[in-house]
Length: 231
Image (cartoon, rainbow, N blue to C red):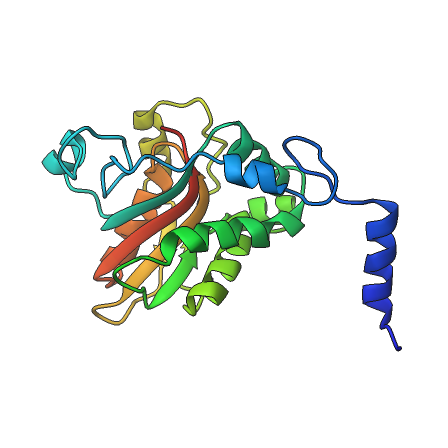
């Protein structure tokens, strides 16, 4: 039997350095079956536009009073310990091989969508940040989601023009102020339905600015989907 060089090398590496779960350390998978089953689904009782937990109406008070540009927000999981370790492994530890699994898990959550988008757009990184990291984690997730939902992925429509410093720990108002006018979009055909994809969101400021930019460029509907969100 002929075995090409690349699979042979990959097999040897798997034997010498078996994968281990990024959360619990179990051998065999980058995220073991037990940890996958232990991921916390995001609460169903949440605002359809921003994902904030609610206890009644479909929209939270904030979105009801000032509707955002995002048409609908879909969140797969709560950003708890397991989801955090999985995202950090992809984003900061350069374990890119976990992206297809995370994309598959997000796709399973999105399969029941009533409306299929015309195109998927990963939230872009600034070119400087992309060079520093070597890849865009949102694009890695989008590639898998696009494959499973049979929706094209486009990385040319939306561009980040301002390199925003890391916003962890900042208040919502500061995040929103920092991200204003940070994106540019190509002129779009009228009526286009877009889905934005990112790995994780806290205040939705980046997603909202992307949606605002895309609607200004002609998009009729901009949904957003993220693997995880802080409640």
